[in-house]
Length: 380
Image (cartoon, rainbow, N blue to C red):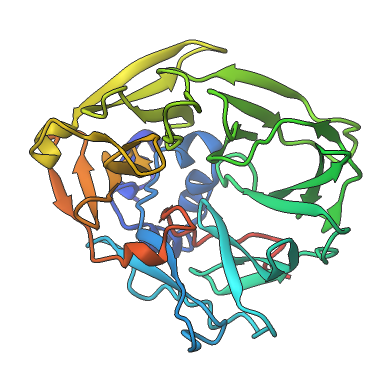
């Protein structure tokens, strides 16, 4: 009876202090708690604690897992130790499965038979051990390249989307067609948009919008998640803050997209690499600096930019990922060959769990936030 007279805001504040897994279990206690945890406004206040960093390790000449190449989780101290990131609950295929993306607790994986051929794409949830195979993901035509982007935000919808970018070379020009998979009815759309720009960089899905960084230019593409009646994709371009990429001088394209409470953020080194700035998008094209982290204090030196044998300038470190809700920036120290985490609040760095960096060069390390809720498409 005492719980019934507490204001909803206070009840949510109390529940938000529980681990996410415990919160999902106590939703069965009473209807009022279930209603609060399902309400869009209150759900934003509930915890979304990352379990750690996902990375994939390749071992030549041996099978590292039932899937052929192990997916590992470098856990944070508060991470759930029961999560099966080896995906042992997924049936084995002829070829190894590769980790392609992670979005709010769901993983996108697929087989890569050859460099240009993708098949047997799956979406799975390691926390609940549920999965589904995406239909019609067989290899495309010759001289084509296919990339998938998984989009899932439980605060926005219980359904997920998969954007398919299929690039075809025609007379030395690259044309890219975009199709979308709707998990609600397990169908693919027809071609909804075409472009000649290479958007194959960093990506993020927030509040129903997929943001994709241009592979070369200092801008991002924003694509609104469509519905089944959509005949085309609403899209717009947003100029990124900071200095523009100079392809004739630099080989540094490692700015990272992130989000904080549903607001798009962007982190990138300053021109000399001695500091990282983190911006938030406060309007359609207005970026505001929220944090500035000194890298001189983290690395203990003020020379963090150097030329390599290829003649280009490179930073001594890459920004792997940013988690503003936990106030962490994960860096790849290429000189010391280690992964380190930097606290945004204190500016101090510490070595992350030992990750074999040479095995993760082809894949960005991904913050994994477990999702214990039900995803209708995976529960069928």
